[in-house]
Image 1 (cartoon, rainbow, N blue to C red):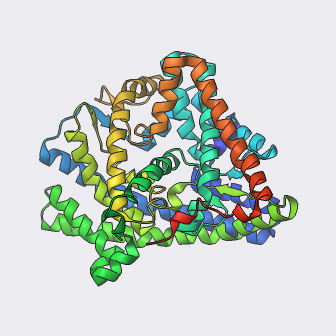
Image 2: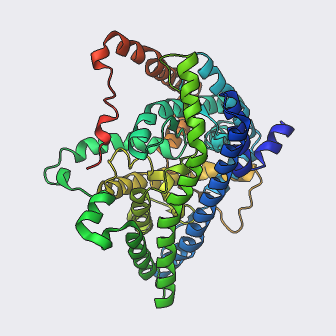
Image 3: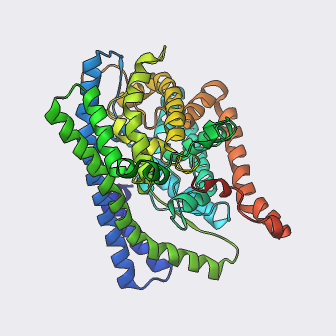
Length: 459
């Protein structure tokens, strides 16, 4: 465990290049090419983190000013995902999430029950959090372990299902995002989009970045939209003219720089992705292999960033207006892109649909974050997290995600029976997705197209 923890402590910007380098060598990539791919991926992540840091540093004070400006007062503070990850890995159970996650992935790949090879092991903190919450709730260590395993199975299933959507919309070939925050939202967006498609008039609204720019010209450019949203947030925060202008340029900079950092990272991933496809095609004909990555690759899309920036003030006002909510959104406001980045492909890049769908999703999520706050606080104390003057804490990531509710509520009501039943259901889903469904397509080749990807056409 000590050696493993040492590698984890290197951080994603160092650990991921090492994993990519090793993975590329295994796939038969030449050492020089594999080395460059790993280094470029690391540099890309450094760039992404720098731009996200700019977003956090600029929007954090604006969000606090907005809260102070309107006199909002809620008793549970959103401490943000870095604190949530520290809490998750700080418990005796959560520290086991990485070896369990790697082991489950290897077993599923060995038996052909997933197509996802997850190299984003740092983000196993999402399953460590749910396991730690269940442990805090039940004091049953092994039930917490089972929760981690079932959550992992669900994320691999989601990764397998979403890969085609991701490729169709984002253009990332052989890449998926089995991400504990981002993946669940896509499965909420699917029924929402079905409803949106059946609302007369609304279903004709074309509001993806390309169509907006065609209609509005330069005012529809994603950079200009970022600047205008920055001005709006600055006004709501009560900034003076100087502060508003500075914030607007910073949000515009994020709209420009983040896609370029993602493109740099993808420059390193593309040769590895191509090698993975060739490797599987040669040795396992008929099978696919998806590289599981951090959904940070998706948040640079203009539709994601534009929608997320609009959702920041909406989230703050929802927190105040929704009766029964106790969570004050703060630290995770700048992380809203992670909450919605896999809703966007389902909504075909439509910003209006994403903002409406995201508002509903986050509104419900605030109630989940409020409900889980006592357990979240208990887990924080158990992991020796510095609470400061706060007596109740939670987070939007992952406190406001529906899977957190499922994984905490089931053992609370049904104990081992509920979690075991969910595990069997998810395992059947993996068997169906990777065994039964492909065999049906082989038996009916005329129906073997990809209906799941069909709705992802841009409007």
